[in-house]
Length: 280
Image (cartoon, rainbow, N blue to C red; front, side):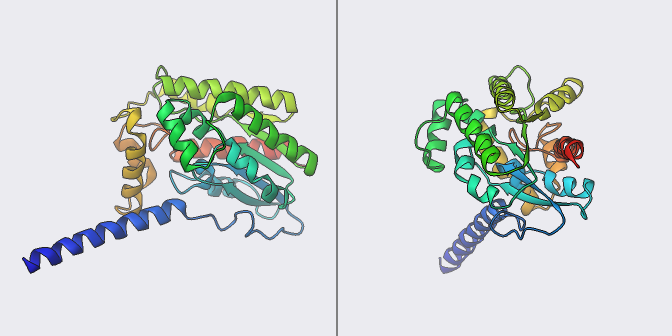
């Protein structure tokens, strides 16, 4: 009996360690984040603002890819992505972006807002977990996104770009996919109203998916479980993100929300095009 009890304690302890380690890996903040960032002399500062897709710990990170594409002697990147953030959360962080004295700011936010729109239960979970003052919806998203842009315009001299959010999943006729497509219309409208650049990530990913159909092996409703399993495979089993996504039938994702290397490279490419076109 004592042997069984010891074995049980060992198994439970190991499971707890794995969970803590997974959480630490998923939430680990970038070294080049605002607040830990020294403004360089003689370099252009590029702030990349967003959620977990920019944060880069869940799925392939586009930030190091972009860093390789840009001249390190001319540009310095700041990773202002935070897991699970909605547009309202990013609006609360604008001060730290302004403090970086950016020359360029790219904003890719809205995947979690769109995900919250997929069901009342998901929206309520976001509201509780992310300390939102009210239930997320498309009108509030527009208000927050425009608020982010106008504050940056009034308090920095940065060139600003809004990036259309990636599709949710890869089934073009799925309701969640269509919701993400609806949200990019809002992003386009805010870009037009505020006269900032619009970078068509969603559209480029959609074009790729029309030619390379994804066939996810689990339903959208299991997104959170799928994400956790993906992170387990990456950080415990040491598989690469592309293999993880491929194993469950995705072409550009590793789960329904996060990107593989191919999609991350598309993000890096459109940002490089933006920065290069505005470079003086």
